[in-house]
Image (cartoon, rainbow, N blue to C red; front, side, top):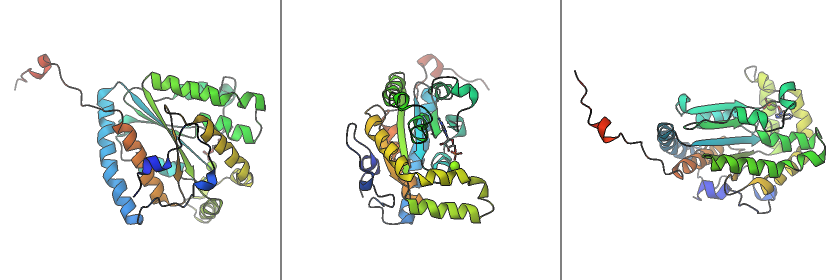
Length: 271
Ligand code: AMP
Ligand code: MG
């Protein structure tokens, strides 16, 4: 089986053709059972490393989740992040900006909710909406959104310099799989709340969204903050890939359990 993290990583500066990234790819994983077993094994290691990150209290990790409606962003929070100690996780979701948010630059609301040292931050949508929905729906002039790729790269490099490792995940589903998930949302009363007719308006502009995704993958996958294109038609492939990427990201930090100073270690606790 291929290394799931490197197989999905977009090399900085490379051209991207989403046609080369099949949303239903299995990446050599035999079947759902083996994917689930692999995910559980790596999740254990990820959980230990997340606790070390919290114990060290020096650095942070930011995980950016992007994808079309029903691509599984909420599912990733539940299935890949849910095993972590809630104390070590900070989750933020981004909707259309409020009037206060829109009165500021597009990174203002992002900065407020970044993970603190010791935390893993999860962004369910992110500053990338400002070069996605904003680009496709022409919410600001082209001259404005065009400059945002460079602004985002500078922002993420700044975060890296200050101790936050950024990793970005594009949950890539097919048009067909999205239709199936929408139908399920409409048919199942416990899932109705997840459906909005506005999702269909976005679906109608699928190709334009894919063009916008391709542009951001090409322009903002950097060494400091790489993108991974995660095949997400199979939820078990998605979860295995993401758990592997997050575990490798934490392993790359070379975390150590903090040691007590000799004076503290030698303290004798009285009865
Ligand atoms: P959901 O994640 O399905 O709850 O929907 C959130 C909605 O907010 C999506 O339709 C996003 O496209 C939209 N959204 C998020 N960020 C922005 C933004 N910066 N400008 C406009 N719409 C946004
Ligand atoms: Mg939605």
